[in-house]
Length: 112
Length: 113
Image (tube, rainbow over all chains, first blue to last red; front, top):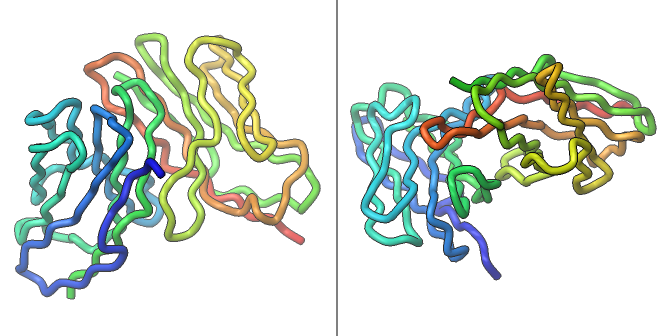
């Protein structure tokens, strides 16, 4: 079945550690996105990529980094520079920038 | 620049009564508009989309939305609410290539028995 897979579903890390969230899609989509969701704030765009080996900062990119070495994969690293990393992270992909997005099931990151 | 405003952060309706979730947008270009639904601790699922074809768009689970350019609105409706409709709903706009996909802040729908 085609889809978008995020792993792990739950992640716990100590403060000061970097952590990488996985996102893989087998939909052959060019565009991929990372969003952060906090209660009452909707979804905020962290990074997006419209093509392999290229990505752009979203609205809240500080403290995060990404790579897009393969079309299928768009991992997100939450660095120790991110002041408040505890959140629900959603990855999405779409055929193009103007098309509907397909979402993964999310990763809930808790930093203690 | 684009923006989207969901006018209500919470909506409560009784089971079997109509649902109205309001969304207003602004866009410099012909927008594409979407409604997504999110159940607790889950990803988002597309309910319906408008991409400049028919202004009345039918989606899954009995939902529909009407694109009204003169009012810059894209409200989501359903004739009769079901308990399973309780979730958070997001209105989304996308337009020119240089603009990002913009999410509204969400409306949480509560269904009263």
